[in-house]
Amino acid sequence: MGKQKRALLRLWVQAGVTALTNGYLRGFVEGKIFTGPTKAACVPGLNCYSCPGALGSCPIGALQAVLGSRKFQMSFYIFGFLMVVGALCGRFICGWLCPFGLVQDLLYKIPGVKKLRRLPGHRVLKWLRFVVLAGFVILLPMFAVDIVGQGAPWFCKYLCPSGTLMGGVPLVAANTGLQAAIGWLYTWKMALLIGLLVLSVFVCRPFCRYLCPLGALYAPFNKFALYRFQLDKDKCISCGECQQACHLDIPVWKTPNSLDCIRCGDCRRVCPTGAIGTSIQSMAIQKPRKGEQLVQQESKE
Image (cartoon, rainbow, N blue to C red; front, side):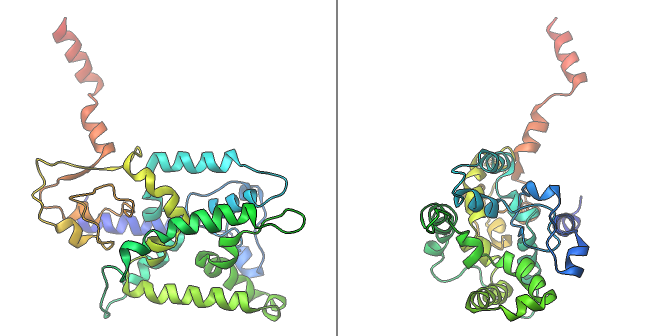
């Protein structure tokens, strides 16, 4: 497959997943949230439960709902789901299957403006997503509870731009009652959303790099997930082409499984020596075919 075709493949997969997970068109027309049985299941990317088209639930929203509930203390389904997905492919989810990631990618493609490799203070800011995960997703819903012991979904309520774009905006636009009830919280979230969308034109995926708790949760799996990058040191000439092509400015030739990597594959497309492979390719090469196994057995006999 050619380099250009691989890039288009990722775009089509992102668009297809977004259409599939937000495919309840009737919800957008009527301004109502889908409540069918599939809403009980989580999708792997950041996909707002309140989006009128959403056919599944966001794992971060579901996790907060359980941790903040006075009836439940732990969801083995949600934690198990996140662990399995992370162990299989790490942040591949961010690069290929996240609807809000697609939005940021499309905005970054807008030409005519100077692109920034990273924001000032990047080395500190990149740890903010882990603070958001620990504070807004886990600790606050568990311990900042009301008089009856019920916690709030702090991240969804105060921060999530994906929820504002895919849930808040369509619902408010279609419901006059909600329009009359708009207050400071909606204004704050719209300001945050607009700020991130504008920033996405200049910096690749600012939300994913600095704020997304789901990316923070998947990030540690990059180093040992079933699908991960592998660097052939014998082929690598340390030319830096991979880092130059990486919109997240990752020195892939040094850290092929960085916590920041979303597995977009741009580094692999530009590598002049083909030094960057994947664990799946490695397993396919190492595993002998059935015919080869028979030949090996016969030769031994």
